[in-house]
Structures are given as C-alpha cells and as structure tokens.
Length: 327
Image (tube, rainbow, N blue to C red; front, side, top):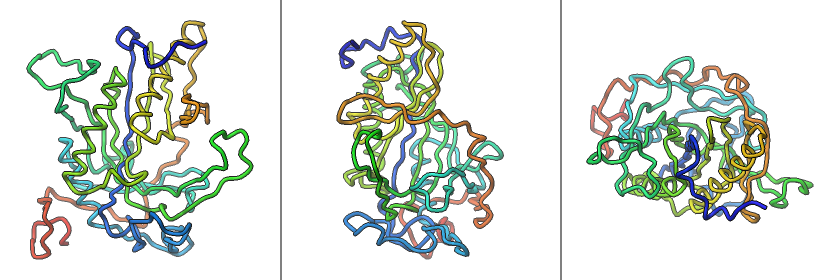
C-alpha cells in the first residue's frame, strides 16, 4: 500500500526535478489565431464556432491575428524573455481526433529560433515553501528559468463518456475551441517541491490578469502539464490536470509512484500519464513521443514575421507608427 501522498517529504528525494508546460488562452482577443471565428467559444452549441479555416478544409489559408502576436510579446516581456528579430511557425504533425487538420500550427526551435520568446527568468514575488531555488545569494529572489514561450493554436475539446478510459465506448469532439490563440510557457526543471509549483502558478495568473490578455476565471483558460523525474531517471509527463490544487496532488502522487518503482529496482518508463481526478492517481496513457516523431516542418502558408525590435505598445493606438500592429 502506498503512503499517504500529501505527507510525502520531497526534500530528501534524490535529484527530484519538476518542469512545467503552462498553456494560457488569449481569451481577451476577439477572434481565433488564424481565422475570424470568435475567441469566446464558451456557452455555444457544439461545433457552431467553426469555419473552413479552423476545420482545416482543403484550399483554406490561415491569416495570423496580429493582436495575438502583441499579447504573446507582452507575456514574454513579463517573464524577462529575449524576443527574436523574426518569428516563424511550424506544423507539428500527429493524428489525434481533436486536431481537424492532423497537425497543429505552433513554433519550434530545433531548426531555427522561431518561438516568440526564449531564455526568460521569472522571479518569485513571495518566499518559496519548499526551497526550489538553488540561488547561493540569500538576498536574491528565488527564480525559475523559462526555456521558451511559443504562440500556437489550441486543439478541439474531447468529451469522454467516462473518466475511466478503459470503459469508454465512444468520445465526443467539440471543435469550437480549435484554433483559439494559445501561449505555451515552458520552464526548465527547476522546481524541487510541489508546493512551489502551486505558488508559481498562483503568481503567474496575476500577471495574465494585469496584462489583460487572459481571464483565468474562465474554464480551461489556463492549463498545466507537468514533467517529473527522480534519481536522474526518465521524465514522465502528466496531462489532463484541471486545477492548480490537482497539479500539486498529481506531482505528489507521481513522486510516490516513481520512488516506489526505484525502491523495487523497476525502471521508470518515459511516458505520458493522465491525472484521474476522481481517484487521485495518474494513469498510463501512451509512451512518450520523441521530437522527431512529430515531423516538424515550416508552415508554408505563413511567412516569417519580422518584429525588428520595434516597440510593443501596451495601449493600442492605430496612429502609432512604432506599434507592432500597424504594419
């Protein structure tokens, strides 16, 4: 029988590493990222907020929402990220029912620096609870490194018959959300405490609210995937987490699970696991994909965007010649 996970002492776990992938919908936009469908899809009948572009029908062409580029740039500046002179988009190819095109338009840094922000650093406003920071300077605020921030489209929403995937006879798909502008913030594995992860998430939603790019109160507007590894082992990704409280619980459970495997000389598999909110456990979903399996290649229908170090205006003025949105 596993120990009660909420009493797990994470300070004494060898080489505990926790990294985050935070997905923030730009809910304060009027339209989706590449078409004129409404950004606010909530409370609409299923599959009513769609068009040939966000459904990926043949012959359609995406048109980039310039306001989304400005919102994403504001988030990058708030996280002290470097912003490149040019950004570009890539196709991430994989088959899943919530992707009507069978690929996601996103950004990818392996071939070139294409993401809208990189090499950021977030300083905590409050003291850490679990000591995730490795800063040697006591007067320096604890911080977390931001690997990259990228702008991409949100997939559709899958509604399952039951929380237990093993007994599902069917799934329903609502494409109203497909194509909504999404900013993904990827951190380095700098966290060593689940409580510090929750503190970080609670702090950054204040940034989104202050910038007026997202309303965190909306269902599904901010989501978080977690990567956990211990003792220098393989990384396990946890998805399907609905709340910040459950983010902390899922990490605690996954640490306990991996620690138990290591104690019994069982290898931890690199895999994606789903958080079962009802049973409060993680469930194996699939083996972890390698980057090359996504077959990234440049999006041919969206040219490179030259930011050119121009001023990002927080208050949009159509007469401003330096604003990113004008030209």
